[in-house]
Length: 313
Image (cartoon, rainbow, N blue to C red; front, top):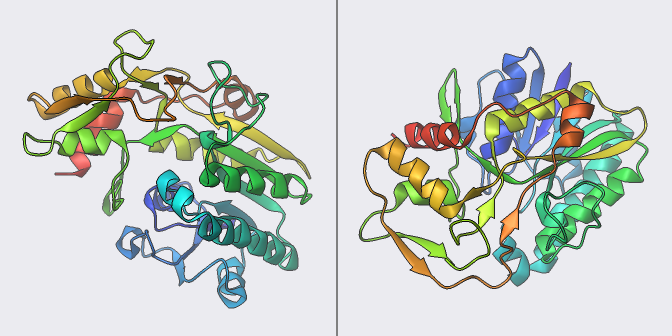
């Protein structure tokens, strides 16, 4: 079976491409390399350097494929607030073009990368798929619009709503890890911190056990394992939404403590004011992932931090 992985040169997409190949699938990748890296791709991948907004590129990328994993998107919350039209054009317009071309090519199977940002400020924790989505930024809004488009498409589809993805994958060609510019994720930023550039703790007076924000982290390998299980369990002609996280929360101080264990020295950190719009706690309800996909995460915070650290050496 040949799978098109859109955004397959990025952090999560390249891990998906590598793990699909390891699992015996054939893989096409479509990526414009605006944030992805060609050197993340295996020589076994058929790579199309192109855009979702190009009919020609989509035709090449979908050639001989039977299913799609759709990761390609703009994904910076702050940038989405500054450039909402760009996010609408790339995320929604690109997905609309992809879905149209899939129909032309007779492809009806798709696993989509969605996000916990579709939920907005949680009314309860853990957050369930049944909770009403209310995105607080254009990024989350575009992802919700894509989920709704695919629900109306008649495809056999699953949208996987991620919480905080972390860790790295050691493939046959070395580590596949986060290489964002700028880097906005906590774990790599904690590991890179030093006395001249300490990591900032945004708020120490949250209503949590140690006063810092709590988030649900999932290892990228567990995440892609869930994507492959989703591919194997697509509902015929229907759309399902499934949360992906660990079902547990870790505070900022717990992440720093895990990083200190990995690097063997004290991490430089400074306390700062809360950021506007940050919820105190975000944790996924993952019961549906366990029942629908027969999936459970197997790697905890220490493994995520250690793999990230090892990938940086």
